Image 1 (cartoon, rainbow, N blue to C red):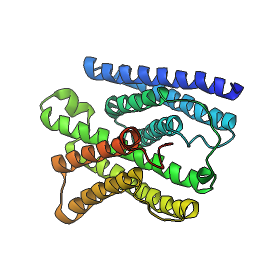
Image 2 (cartoon, helix red, strand yellow):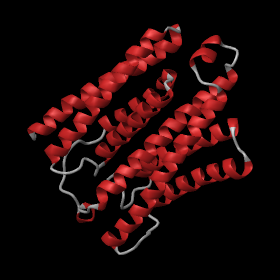
Image 3 (cartoon, helix red, strand yellow):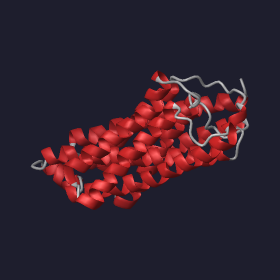
Length: 274
């Protein structure tokens, strides 16, 4: 095995362990209702993200290309994107309770990545394109943003039932604030998902001579886009907020996960490599 890929394997395992520690610490924060575990978890999550970034960089060097072309690489990049978006929102809004909802999602996705084949194969001709980086990186940002919106929306739905608990009132933003954060995350994700569809269509025309082939992943990506478009339309035109909007954001992310994992497992097509 390539030396770089051996190093990447060790760093990847280190990132997984750190994500696990972060998740446990954030959940402990909720269980014991003390702030110290959350502060440690914040630092651990940053460390996990740095390890994760290093693993992707080392794999890219070892593979001699961007690490974005198979199920393992995209899954680990998916988890990386969620962590990146989480850290950005944590920095901007400074409520660490969000980590208890985001880190389990990250850990499950990176765990899924760990179960995939890590072998490096020669790129198929269709993937040897400059559109690869643009298309996949926009997907990572889109999915990462939707992952944060999912976590915030779950917090909203739980807070609505736990409003009388002092801990939730003190450490979790108001329902109005949570609704606003989820909306902003969805807007960011929708923008990048739109770019995913556009760049994918341009790339497909260059690679296969057709802008759209109704491949299962293309179809489900479009379905996901439509779901979030409906969310934004109902919110802007009909004032949908609160529980309805939160539930819609949760459903949208379930479609995101199915678009990636479910389609690859149940509906193989020309996108089955990732």
